[in-house]
Picture (tube, rainbow, N blue to C red):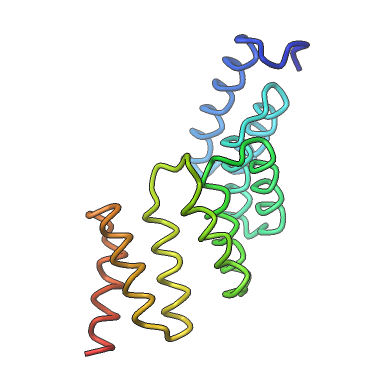
Length: 165
C-alpha cells in the first residue's frame, strides 16, 4: 500500500489490477480474478473493485461473501448504485424475496448508476413471484424505458400481459 492513498501511482496501479481482474473474470478464471481484485483493493480501495469482487463470489454461489463485499463498496462510496442492486440480487438468489426489495429500491435512488433498468427489472421479478402482476408490469415497463433493448424485460412484460389479459 502506498503511504499517500490519494497517490496517482496507487490509483493507476489499482486500475491496472482491476482491469486484469476483470479480464480474468471474463475468462472464467475466478480464483485469479479474486486475487487480482483483492490486490487492487489493497493498493487503492474503490467501490467498483469491492462490487466486482462480490460479483465473482456470486458466480461461485458464495452469496454471503458477495454481500459483504457490496456492503464494503457502499462504505467506500455510497453513491454507486451497483452494490445495492447486487445485494438485492444475492438475497433473491438466497430465497429472500422480501429483504431484497429495499436494496433494489435503494439502487434506484443511487446518484451514480449506469442502468436503472436492472433494479426495475429485478423488482419486476420479485412482484411477479408474489403474483402482483400490475406492479411487476410497471417495473418491467420502467426497465424498458431505461433500456429499450432489454430483451429479458420485454419478454417478462409480454408474459405478464398474457397473464392479465
